[in-house]
Amino acid sequence: MNHLVSLALIGLTLVSCKKEDDGFTFVPARDRAEEAPVSTQIIEDYLNTHFYNYEEFQNPPANFDFKIRFDTIAGEFADKIPLIDQVNFKMVPDRVTEGLEYKLYYLQALEGGGEHPLFPDVATLSYEGTFLNTEFTASEYTKLFDSAITPVSFQLTSVVNGFQDGVITAKTSPLPAIEAPDGSLSFEDYGVGAVFIPSGLGYYVSPPNGSVIPFYAQLIFTFQLYASRVGDQDEDGIPSIYEDLNMNQLEEDDDTDGDGLPNFFDSDDDGDGRPTSEEIIARTYVFLDGEPEPTWPVTETEVKRLYDALTMSTTIYTIEYTDEDNDGTPDYLDADS
Image (cartoon, rainbow, N blue to C red):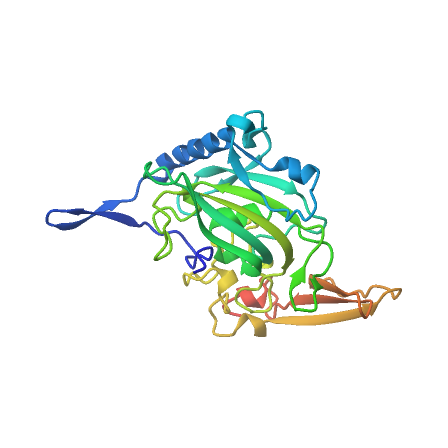
């Protein structure tokens, strides 16, 4: 079962339950603002007491798989550098409680030679997901709950927020995949990283059905990021990165027609009955190596370009945002156009 994908687009106020003599009673979820510093402390305790196999990354042994592995700083490993001295962090907003932020720690074992994916892109990667179990101390401290050994592709808008925010800190391979005779794919110079996710950016009190993940669990994902492509989740012709109208790098809070569907997931952004795809003009330009790059009117916006090494050609995709009534609002966001 693939637990990484979370179908919830926006956070919900959920409850846990406990059994009493007269049946089940519902217990409100913990306050997210109060839980946030607890989550940070749990993660920092882990980072202070664990290390990763950094020496293998510095001097890769023969047949090294370039996977991150963690262990406790103790005994023969007592002199290892703790993770807390090797990670970076960024402040990430909570998607439920306004004004609440989390310190999201991430590790960059290998940067990668390509480009950073954007937050609504489609990423191709392999990964392992574990959780820190602090709710039931008699159980394992960390436990693997999900993994993909072979490359898989995910809409970054469909995974837990902390994983989305962590993956975009890495870079892809600069080269296309290499296909072996058996059909398997391999990549070179790709990014390798890890992200340490507080519960509020993970599953909080809504782990996937059938999952072993407890409520309020902090998550750790290690990953190898191979490739990415432009995301257009609603297939309306506008890449989702351009549907972040307030440019806050959150896809959930732009909803032009107020129908409860964010623009990136709404094929009729203004709710006028005309699909967005019919209220824009998409164009394609192709040119070969050595030919001058095409030009286009200022009314067009480049949204994607692809290079084909076999034909030595570049394809550029653009969009023209039409404005039939000349009121300054593009048709796809204008309900009375």
